[in-house]
Image 1 (cartoon, rainbow over the protein chains, first blue to last red):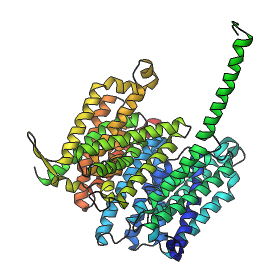
Image 2: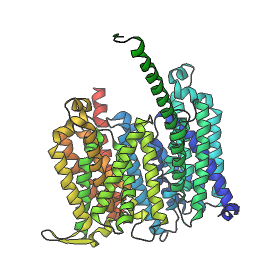
Image 3: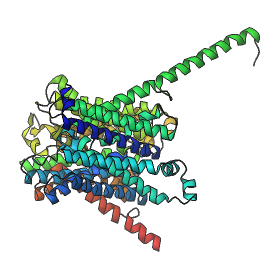
Image 4: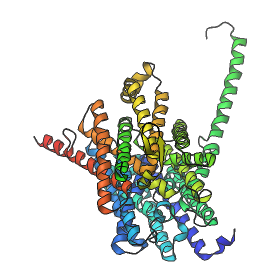
Length: 308
Length: 288
């Protein structure tokens, strides 16, 4: 079992899914506070046609080109969601569901064509649906790490701006921070995180890596910075753990195991978290109950029959 | 009936059933719940398969309903624990779906179930898996299941039409009238689940979302009346199914993918040209 850890390719893959998890966890916090958790889900699905189109155009699996294709298609998806939900009476979640499934359907159409022309499933594009971290080669790993680090850096360098944008948009505008610019920055960051992750986690489950760590962190941290750090930590942990477990079996997809790892972290946080975790809440409830009971015992003894 | 006719009939049944259910999904603003349920139904089907060891209609339907209700229940409970609604959806469906995929790809991988199949649907295989019935003769199993589900959906929608209407448009009025709003919610989620399960063979987990949401959203742009929406939306669903089949035959590609794409075309036309709520009309109206 431990021999897997010793192979150098595996070490690289583990490092890169961990860095990816850190980036996804941190960016996921922004979505959490914008209350757009499912946006990452629909944009991830919307990236699929871009991946396949990029492959069909250049005819080989070049990680960077596929990522650019994915990013363009996800951004078009984001634009459509925005357009539909602002300029018609369709609600945002309906437009997200539509874009998600239509783009995905289009992606599957293209994928069927690509698989046929590349002779069966040799294109390896199927890995993009559930993620196959083990299929990454050295250059993929390096590309992924660099991009993930750029995302983390972009989040870190504009930390104060993010805080203003999320919690006090009026004030942010007052001091000249363009909310339109920040919106675009946010969408680009979101899309970048998604497309960097799809090779390792897959289009269907990458959203989990952005949603679950942020919600888990909520149970431990009180401040924005604390939450981002914890969420990044949880993301990194889930990424590495899931990748490791999926490497134990041959051909096991990586994405689902990463999600399970994140879910375990979430359940532990939900139960034992220090900020409104279930256990803490239960103890507080019991304490209040005892307190009230004690006081009520005294009431009839002192003021019998009194209306107060 | 010929091979092609069976495929088109099945696709149309998917369009009608999903179109009907979709209207209420859109109006109740629970579109993303459909996305969640369409994913988690996979887990229900896998578990039903693990227990019965066969791919049978009733077992799959029961497994699907159970998974759908579990999803609705977990989302509701997490929401009650102060987790944002959409975050709760995101956590629940990805986790349950991941468990389903792991079960398939690790232990049952060599048997009949196949993730690819579940996600993309294999409508082309449907005419080969038939059952023989006394009155209807030999018909494909998936088509029969869709007919039954459509019947159930129609019965539920017509029998409680007024209740659906009130709980959808004014839940607090419904509650004050003594209509069990929560029960209706779970019944509705069960209807979504069986629709998804029945459509699974034909269009797969994710494209069913397109069939559920898009025709209904398109019809929402054409009319303000519920009853008209309930007629238009299945009509758009059928149109998308036929159009999708034609595109797929023309490009020789995935039928379910093309059907999802065709719903997109219908929506785009509605979005641009629908009277009153379309983009063009609103632009003209504003300039006048």
